[in-house]
Length: 423
Image (cartoon, rainbow, N blue to C red):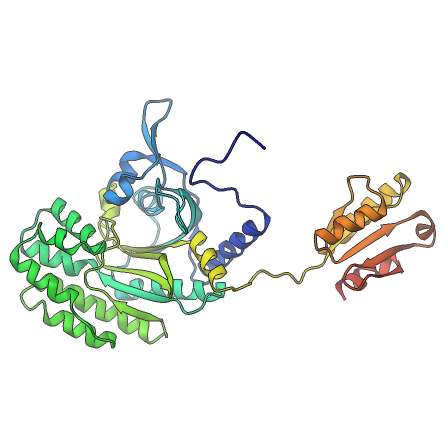
C-alpha cells in the first residue's frame, strides 16, 4: 500500500466517475452554446484582495490562501464570479453589451468533507453582464432549467428570493452595512433569534411576518409579502421586480416550488433576485445564483449590472446517481486486437489504426499475452469483440472475429470488419 494519500477533501476521479463528470460538463457546454455564452478560462489563482472583496464571511474564511514567492497574498478561487467581474472591468469592458460568459473548472473551499461537499469541486458558471432588466434574471434561471433537463435529472425545483427585500428593510432602519451582512447570513441559516438581536424592534416584527407567510400559489405569496412591506418602499420595489421575473418564468414551465423572502445565499455581492435549485429528499443545493449590480464597479470598472449562476457539477452527478439515472452512452463497440505471434504485430497494429480512424474504440494487446489470457482480459473489461490476427488467416486477407456476448467466432474478411462490428 502506498504511503501517500490524496490530501483530505481532495479526490481522485477514476474512469467511470470521470466519464460521468465529463458527460455533465459536455451538457453544460451545450447549454452555453444554445444560449450563446462564450467560454473563457480564468486563472486558478487570483489575488486574495479580489476574491475576498465581496465573498461574505462564509466563503472568505474558507479560502485556501498563501503568499507566493513574490510575497503576494493569493488564493485558490472559491468560485468564478469575482474573476469574471475582474475581466468585465478590464479586458471585456469595451465589448458590446450584453456580454454572455461561460466558464467551467475546479474551485476550492476549506469545508468539512461530507456527502456533496469537498474541498476541491467542479462548477459550471454563466454570467450575463450589461442588462438590469428582469428578462436577464429570468434567462439565467431558464438556462439552469434547460441544463438540468438535458442531464436527465428529474423532479428538480427552484427556490427563489430577492435580497432587496431584507436589504430594503434594513436600509430604511439605518442598519450598518456590516451588521446587514451578518443579519443576512444568520437569516439564511434560519438562526432567526440571533439575527433579531442585531436589528430594530420594527425590523423584527416585519421579519417574523415574512417568515410566517404560507401560500401555495406563488403570485398569492408575492401579494402577501408585498402587504407586509407597506412602509418600506425599497423592499416593495424588490418584490415588484421579483413579480416581473416570475411572470417570465411561469410562461416557460419553470418548476418553482418556493418563494422565500428571507433567503440570502450568504454572498455579500448580491443586489437583486437570488435562487437555488434542489431535488426532493436530497438536502444539498445543486446550484444557484443571482444579481450583482455593483461588483464590477468595485473592481475598477464602470457601473455595470450583471446576473450569474453556478452549478455544482459533483452534486449534480450525485443527484443523478441518487435518482438512479444512467445517462452515459454505452452503445459504442469496444474491441481488443490480438496478434497471435510477434510476426503479426505490425499488421495487427496497422489494422487497429484503421479501425480507430473509422470511429471504433480499439485496444491493442501490448502485454504479449497468449490468446486465452487476452480473452479473459477482454471479458473483464466488458469488451464486445476480440480480433485475432493469425498467420494463416492473413494469407487469405482475413482475421478471426470473436463476439464476447454470444461466444461465437468466425473468420471475417478485413474489408468487412467495420460493417460486422458496427452491425
